[in-house]
Image (cartoon, rainbow, N blue to C red; front, side):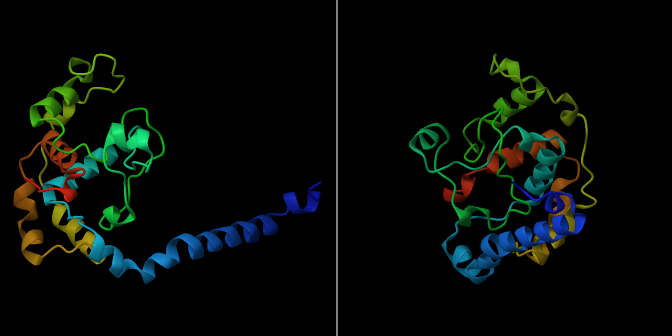
Amino acid sequence: MINKDFTSSVVILIVSTTLVAAFSFLVWVLPTFFYQDKLIAESSAKPLTALEVAGRDIYISEGCHTCHTMMVRPLNAEIKRYGRYSRESDDIYEHPNLWGSKRTGPDLTNLGRKYSDQWHIIHLRNPRDVVPTSIMPSYPWLFEQVLDGEDIDAKLIALRTLGVPYTDKEIKQARLEVKGKTKAQALIAYLQSLGQDQGVRP
C-alpha cells in the first residue's frame, strides 16, 4: 500500500516529477546531440520552401495534426496502406515534429503527389465531394484569406537558428514567394511536399 504522506506531499510530487523528466531527457533527448551529424549525413530530408513553411503553420493552426498522424510504423499493414515507414533522419528539419497520436483520418507521411492540386482544392472545399464517408470539416475560408508574407522571413531565420540550412537569399526572397497566395495554396503546397524528400521534388 502506498504511504499516504507520499501521495499528499507537494514537495515529493515536485521532486518525483523532476526526476522523471530528467531521466526522460537523459534517455531520449541527450543522446541525439551526439549523433546529430550522423543523422544529417544519412538523411535525404530537404528544408521546406517559404510557401510550404507558411502552409505548415496553417496545417497546425487549423488543427490538422490532431486528426492525422505523420509517422508510419515499420509494420507490414501500415507500410501497405501508407507507404514507406518513418525514420528518425526524416525529421531533422521538423520544428516541432508533427508525429501525432490519433488517426481520425489517414496518416499523411507520404501524401505528397498522391493526388493532384485540383483534388486537394475540392477536398478542402468539401471533403465529401471526393470521399463520401469523410467526417473531415470543410475549409472554404482558406480560399478567401490571403497571406501578406510579413513574418515569413522571421520564421525562416528562427528555423535557421535551429539548424535548418536556409540561405540568406532564400530568406530575402521568402516574403515575395508567400505574398498574395491564399492560405489554401500554401496548405496544398505543404501537403504536396510530404514524403517527397525520398524522391525527386517537383
